[in-house]
Length: 265
Ligand code: MG
Image (cartoon, rainbow, N blue to C red; front, side):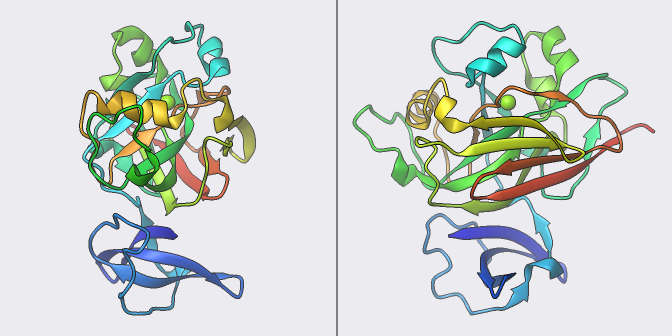
């Protein structure tokens, strides 16, 4: 299953995306957020070329739970200690933008705004206090690309990260939600700035695998359908300037591409 959220003629829906003869089409659409792989069963067949719609963020989460320092080399590059248990923080739903939307640098408040390419995990059903014996896979609807945009100077200054990570437009997500990936076996995560490769990691290098993360988070808060876990970023983070284009590519999903502008020109 691969789906998007799209706008066509002023109407917003979720669309099943399939490739036919080398062209991508939306072949079925539903109004409410999918929560299982058969969410599109029974919907009217369509053949809308993907190029004719405006893609939106494929999720409308109640929260975005982000993992800090889940790759050893990234913790080292920021001179942070290797964590002994998962470290997580939240980004607000108001930070979410879709493919092609502008990342707006708050240049009146921050001099350094970084990209962080990450694998995003989309939750299928409510989970709270998962136990060691629980299989986490039934709680995963699929995977997407996330850019955990960060005002690095404010992150260092504030000591906690709500401001640095929480600006509007600081959470590009998309373009699709895809099932069938296996982060335990390794999924490649790459970031490019103006087409130049800057991050190139694989999820086999997670310090804490996805099942550990989900159990850890769910001891604290209920993960709801449509919530996203951003699983941490590999080494190679760096700053973005107005006029740049940033891309996050996750193997098996596609590329999330966003232009960067300054709020105040
Ligand atoms: Mg991050």
